[in-house]
Image (cartoon, rainbow, N blue to C red):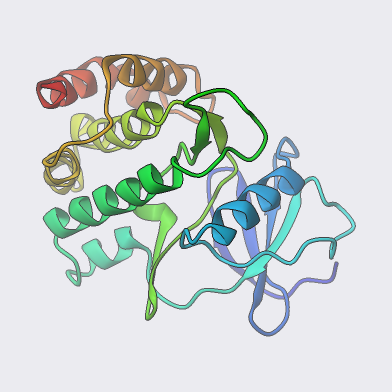
Length: 226
C-alpha cells in the first residue's frame, strides 16, 4: 500500500504514516509474520488487554506489513529519559502490565490447548509501551508465542538486567526498573529465567556486548527468585 513519511524505526522494522489515525509497520528483514501477529493482537484486545487496533487485509505484503492504530504519546523509555516518569515508576508499570498479562494468561490460548499454555508477549520493555492519554498500550507482538507465563517475566527481567549490566547512562535507571519490576510477587521462575537467557544469547539482533553481559544480568536477577 502507499505509505506516508517514515515516523519510526527499530532493530528490524520501520514505521510509516498510513492515513488518518493509522500507521504501517514494515519488517525490513522479511522474516516476520504480520498476519499471525495481527491475529494475536486482536485476540488479546478482545480480552481487554491494552494494544492498538489492527486493520487486517489492507496491504500487498501481509506477511511483512501490519497496519495498526496510530497512538499518541511517548514510549515509556522516552518518558524516563525526559524525566516525566521515574525509573521506579516505570518498573512498577511494567510489573502492572505483566500482572495484566497474568490475567491474560488466564484467558484461553489463541491456538494451543495444553494446560497452562497462554499467550506470551516475550518482548515487554520500556520501548514497547506507549503512554497514551487513555493509559499504556503495549506494541510489537512480533515475538509472541504461547507457553508458560514464567517466560514472559524472565524475558522482561533479562532485557532490563542486560542494560544494567552493559553500563552506560541507562544502566542505573535500568537497575532501578528491574528492582521495581520484581519487587512484588511475580511469576518469575528458574525455568523461565533459564529459557529467557538462552533465547537472548541466541538472538541475532544482540550485539557482542549484550551477549557478553548475560552472566552479569543473571546475577542481578537471581536474588529476586526467592
